[in-house]
Length: 269
Image (cartoon, rainbow, N blue to C red; front, side):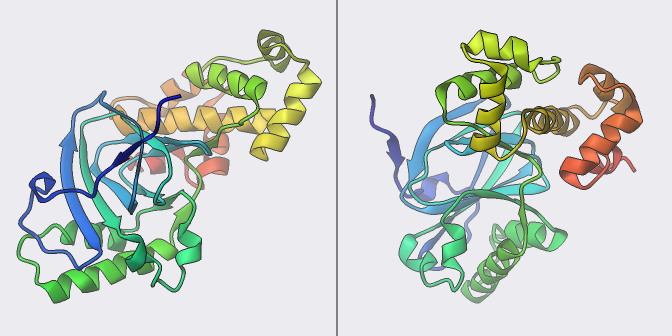
């Protein structure tokens, strides 16, 4: 087994703007093209990864996180992760040295990965950090604001948990490879060499979701990905492609997972 790549602290030539950052915090702005994959790796620092434009998918041992522009992902130090760019991305990343981070009062809440819903205030604070005209005092205040907003913003609507048990994992990947398909648990169980009863129990134990609920989460994640990368797709088209009997049924399932209708999520209503 090959050792995991540990990337070094970001270096100044990677930084687009001539901005300043406080000791212990590193600010990196980079653009990536659609289709690029950042293979599994880890950092010595914790990081807040935010796409000011575009949608990405972040995979950790715990699961798969879909990150459209109104989300950001928190990745703790030393956590293996991979990033798939689903659109052209304008990435704005904040790296935090562990000594700096451990001085945070709520550091314990930042030891696991999660996706945050990016409020208008958090969005503006992150973008303002990359203003070349910033003073040291302004940058420090903006970093504090980001951390305050981060603590208040945890959101798991775009998370698809991945089971670790081999048979259950294979079944999950079959569904994720074709989230628009109507996957029958009996057929899926035969494909991975177990019984429907066992597979149902494994999904519940490994993901804390029933097989039916997990498949719905996977379909909604696929819908979010499509809404985030295709401005021309209609809700009716999505409902049909994902196997829902009607637009209201699809909208109800979407709202159950995300708290919003597909139209509201896409910013069209």
